[in-house]
Amino acid sequence: MRPPLLLLLLGLVARRSENFAHAQARPKILCLHGGGQSASAFQSDPGMMALRSDLSGYDFVYASGAYPGNLWIRDPPGGKGAATTDPHWASASMTALDTIVATQGPFYGILGYSQGSAFVPVYLSHAPAGTFHVAFMFCGYLTTTHTGILNQVNAASPFGGIPALIWMGANDYTIANSLSQQQATIFTTPTVIASSSGGHAVPTASDPTYSQVVAFMQVRTRNGTGGGGSVNVGTPKSSSSCRPLSNIAWIAFAAAAVTKLL
Image: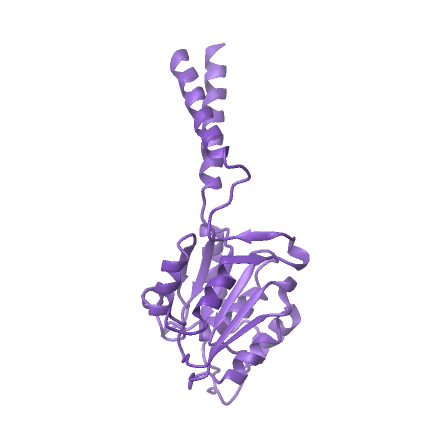
């Protein structure tokens, strides 16, 4: 009778160990760089470094645009003055993010800057509902030069009522604030933060609105079809403060039992 009991105990140890590891998992944010920027450069961006320092309870995962020049969406064939109507114009970037979500998820949120910010609602229109619980967009806009893609975005809006942060800087001379405000309209009651001194960059700790950004990212309430309740992403959650100890104790007990059987 020992071999079946031994296998049972080994299986229980493995299962409890897996559950313990899952309980300790940190919430993840999928980060999309700006157009022409690399994932590694975005990781070294001063604003992202500041957020990573002040939000140490997160894991930031950096993705790369799938098109030449590190683009999430290719320019229309006739240039930006002639919009493309192809709804599959950014399919390679969609596939790249699908792979990351499948292999490195689940994800708590999605964050984008500049063209990456524009791509956040594009990917939300494609991903299954509940893939992300919150969206963060910096210096963003809607993809008006890609009407086929934008039609899909508008059809999927407001993406299950996902909470959204839209940030813009008064000194952004690359993406006008009016374009970021237009992006905000496709979300349900988005939090719009306008910095009087910010530019075309993720804000750093010196920006007057930085503390608001951090506060928004620390604690969010999920509304709509995806469920309810507060989610504190500053500290990994567990249903009981004693759960880690109970898992360790169980694993130790099962290991001792296996040792005796051997």
